[in-house]
Length: 476
Ligand code: LFR
Image (tube, rainbow, N blue to C red; front, side, top):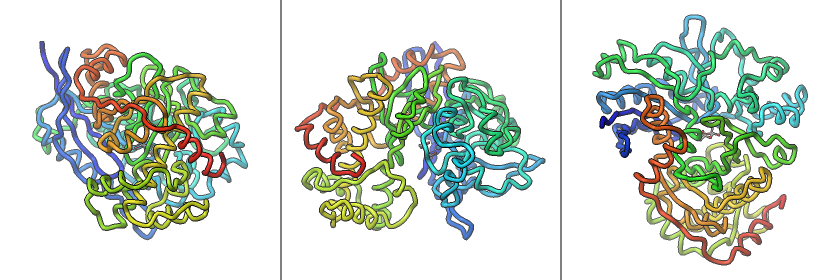
């Protein structure tokens, strides 16, 4: 039987990669064609994405990937480029960690109260939701808005669309109808004509333009396929679960911890707990909470001058557990810079021992992440009335064995870790499915379980100490 090749472009907050997935009826192999740094740039007006360099990385990656049957793109959510009437980009896309949205949500809530906004869009409060970014921006001259993966797709094919899973992070989509919320848009003064028509994951998104074929050396026609273009949608599509009784944690720069549901949870209790309802494949809803994730450690490592991570984790494993914890869900850790100091400060303020050495700070971060994972998994089950027996950990954090074990201990549930490149695999599976090689979400997951290496961590230790640590954090 024939094996097909799919290029998955997966852009993360610190690096982009182009992976090649080879899919047969009973096989799935992923290899890396190209990896490049994603370096946000701080200019006087704020923090920006270097989008041309990212597009250059995509072209280099497609060249390195060689002949493929289709291409799909996923990236982080919420951010966008604005185009003028001729389709030319108006300035560099703003990074979601930029400070221009400070205080904007509060202004929006004066027009649409937060409970009403949540009931209509299901999105958790984050200062960077596209809606708040759009209210903060002066949209002078902008005729079109393309979310980051849609912008790159446009440059590759010349065709414009708005892929649904990522559109659901704009806070302008109603998660019940999975269509635009005209009412909310109108009340906050956003013209939905800015957006190109919605595309579903699996829809065709055009063919590589002749100039792109020439630059990459590929032979046309090469179709681009819309995938779950929000990286978290792709990652959850690649959670190797069977049945429904599972929670997942997508680990990387962020930890996205929650459940896959077939309907949104829009209660006031859910809003107060800051759970989000993002849209996934096949009518699914990702009911989850954003947790700061390994960003906390990445920023510390940067401040310490990039010490060896492996050694740091070994040293952290020797530090006594749960001495100090911080609230890893707190937006106070969103902005870059001074991370070791900010963590120390949070420990001091909550009356806990202040971690001093890099090993101690690292331990504090990993304990805090595991604790936040526990809290999110527990609360999601309760708020959605959806119990689970296992926690699947996917993404970059699967390489961090200490984090996986601590997460199992904190949740009091077995953790199944893997795959690491979940977003790229989910991206590949949607393309394979669009071309008839994989049946559905469950079929893709079954193929993953058979083909990808997974590691199981059993919960250890006394779970009471996690409860005690949780009680130490304000608000509990
Ligand atoms: C993860 C992610 C999260 C989103 C954040 C900002 O990469 O896509 O799901 O909340 O980045 O876009």
